[in-house]
Length: 511
Image 1 (cartoon, rainbow, N blue to C red):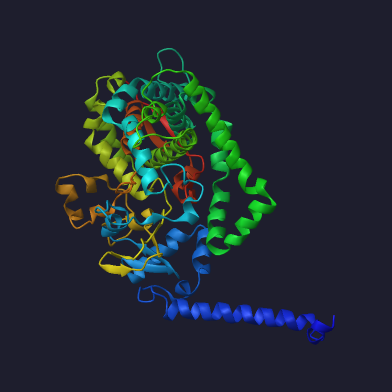
Image 2: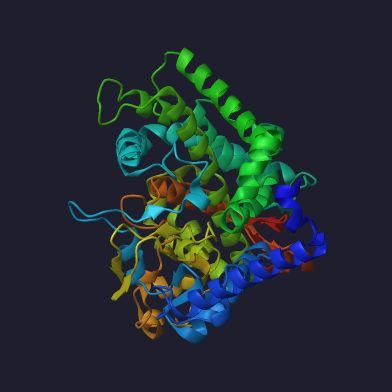
């Protein structure tokens, strides 16, 4: 057409050249702005990371974020700018400044939508008012009284776990001692924690300990972890790709999630149709019906039950796996713990939710294990509130992402003496703990802090104490082979851990 005649004489290659040139000019100017004019320009950190989100994203996708950010903090200090609009903290004060309780009228540092977009209807990613409503409703299910009532339910899975492990010990001739057996403890920890939380959240277990394999619905959680890791990165860098995929190929992103929700809905429906009262989390959620401060809609019950299964199983199993591996690799620590357990109880039947509370060295072992292998390796970022805030004594503008990487914080020599060593004595009083007197122990917050801290903290510690006490009462642990010795190095940090099999030799205690 004549109207476009002047443009038709320009070759297509020239237009593509112009487009490329403009794109490069924009990218370059944006990088200059990020380094020299951005509100976070005064924060320390490498210029390349400040200029573009790409170095951070590369490390995220390469699963080297922990090691890279650890090096940055070692060089730049307690706070580092790790992306144009993102800060990482390792100072103990950051926990309360970013996630702690807020005064009346103060805003909340909200959850990062790139990270929590699929969790807005449950405790994990809900807005402030919905989260408070969910928390009030569920608090009864996690109370000390409810846990007392839940003890018979929990103990039956502890006993079933022990039965399964004893089955693995090869029988011997009459009068002889059982022989050692090699067991993938990581798998059995998963079987146990999924059955416990499944019963408490859905009213029935997944049958993992019965069948000695993961339920298909549970297995999907592990299979989709790498995909979720990639999707989080895409949301940060090219969000339009996620939008296009949802429009053009909805099954790529949505089918697995829809199947998970549908399965959870069926389990919740079955529990609700039973019309029975039992000390579980469904009972706690429906108890608030009619009370505006606690009332939860049906779809919110399903979402929260699904979350509790996911968050209340894999994290505890990871912590147990880390503790078992560390004990197997440190026989001197295992000997101390075994002595504590075997001298405290006259028989294994005395090990219950109350008696394990007396095991002080046990708690120190579990805390030290959580320090070395946090159950959640990801930073769980927050977005600075409207109007900005002062974090660790320095102003942060609104909209900036603020991260606390547990592995980085817990392994920093700024916070802990000999941070890479497994030394439970650092958590105890006595002569052996004197050299750790300058440790910044408030930096250790494996269950987070503030109004959104982990609601299942007490349940997690109870399960860990029970399982480890029963293990120590019945078995000595040792690595099965050289591959087992490198187990922790082979754990892959996504937003959760991808753990290889943990093959541990169980040697029955002769009595």
